[in-house]
Amino acid sequence: MENIDWKNLPFAYKKTDFNVRSYFKNGEWGEILVSDSEFINMHMASTCLHYGQEIFEGLKAYSGMDGKIRLFRWEENAKRMINSARGILMQEVPVELFREAVFKAVRLNEKYVPPYGFGATLYIRPFLVGLGPEVGVKAAKEYLFVVFVTPVGPYFRDGFAPVDIMICRKFDRAAPRGTGSYKVGGNYAASLQSLKEAHMAGFGTTLYLDACEKKYIDEAGPANFFGIKGNTYVTPKSNSILPSITNMSLMQLAEDEGMKVERRLIPVEELSEFDEVGACGTAAVITPIRKIVDPDTNKIYEYGDKNEPGPVCKRLYQHLTAIQTGDIEDKFGWISYLE
Ligand code: PLP
Ligand code: COI
Image 1 (cartoon, protein in one colour):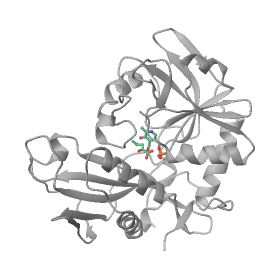
Image 2 (cartoon, helix red, strand yellow; image 1 turned 180 degrees about the vertical axis):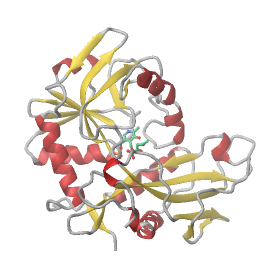
Image 3 (cartoon, helix red, strand yellow; image 1 turned 90 degrees about the vertical axis):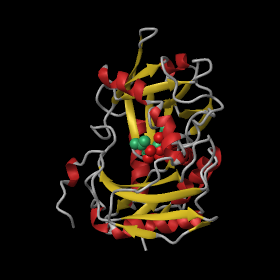
């Protein structure tokens, strides 16, 4: 076991011992190579450096009370990565290669998986880049797939505690028929200006509206958005947001708990009708939202008891994390054990 202060881990890069890599060359994927280097050697004219051919995924490994290490819904990340690759004409990473690389990266760094009960996890970051010299705008012929891991604490500093967020109209993250539904690096570059403004104004992240009409809610920084209205879980339907695996799981859990689930357009004004709202994602887990400020209309939407997550957010959070750590039975078949 590494000598790490698991309880106070930030969501930040921390070196581990190994990463794994596979190159796509001459029309085929090579064997999985193990590396102890944190660096990549690439041609300076690689398409990932000039034309944004970069996609990534994010998933986590969890320690259970039984000492076993569990991965949550990795197949969904593998499928989404294939979809992202198709979206920007990259070579797809086969599901089996994804699985082998992810499990190998975790196994090789097992001592960095935070123990049960500290609120920390091992974040797994698979990514794919286009390599090889191209100066004209075109897809690369060669690709590199890498998986590295890093132990992390909560994405939002205070963990499962409410945050304040700010509506952003000044910048768009993704266009309606653009790359918003793919996990491409460029979407995150496009979010940096608005994030900086939100952080400087003291907010945890930005709430994006649809880029076309600025009427409907899209997503909440690096996480999907949901609202609770009575016994209904409401989440945006949009083709410019990332289809979140956490959100997909919460919709199923909400239904399982007897709630109604609605995936539909959410007009900004409806924010005043929710009992609770939250952001959800692998990194964010469920982050309850305390206050949403709209700087253009000077409207402020506030939820619940100032510093306490609402009861539905709390229940869904407990339900989801109990499955992830194995505290309760995984009746949906979402868990894979590290062999
Ligand atoms: N939306 C964006 C823009 C994200 O980066 C993420 C994180 O992956 C999510 C939503 C949440 O997706 P998931 O629950 O699959 O991690
Ligand atoms: C994740 O939740 O896995 C994400 O990708 C968020 C990340 C951009 C920090």
